[in-house]
Image 1: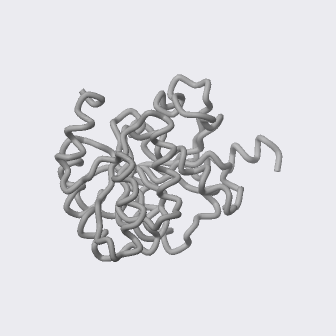
Image 2: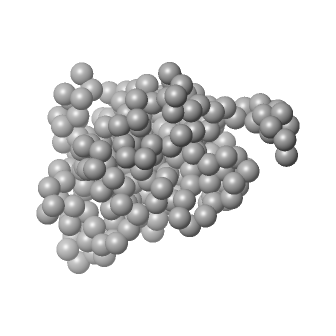
Length: 230
């Protein structure tokens, strides 16, 4: 497909893009190692100008993750904090949905192009985010998701955010990669503790042992972010 046809296709689908050299490119993202040279987006790009918190966790999140997110997000949303996540199954989906349900704004970072949405069961959620919030990807719309795209996607999730909150995570998980990337960029890392008998608590409890702030309510996050936000 030639460039003119490609740009025409993007325009017909309300797909826009910005490069690292554009004034609208998020300054937070410029601070990370290996920032994406180009960002494709659908939706409200002004959300990139607001303070954001990444919310990540296990794809096989339990009901406890739902309750934790539902309890913590309203206090953050009242402070106009945008919720950033990766549109994956489990924790990501809950974070996006509860942000919307509580009247907040959310940004979904994809691990592939817009024309190959993954996972497919989140298509309707993605449509809602595209209309009223923001979908973002460094991958051209025609590119299909690949396994190695998702760890790369995580640097954008943490890079756009003042801090990263990990809800549930196994000892080895993509959520811990996101937390590591946040630390490398000098951002805050928060974790919700869990029972020592639960596999999904191993990652979060380990983060707390390593210095992540233990979170039980939104105030625990807000008091750490206050200097950065104001």
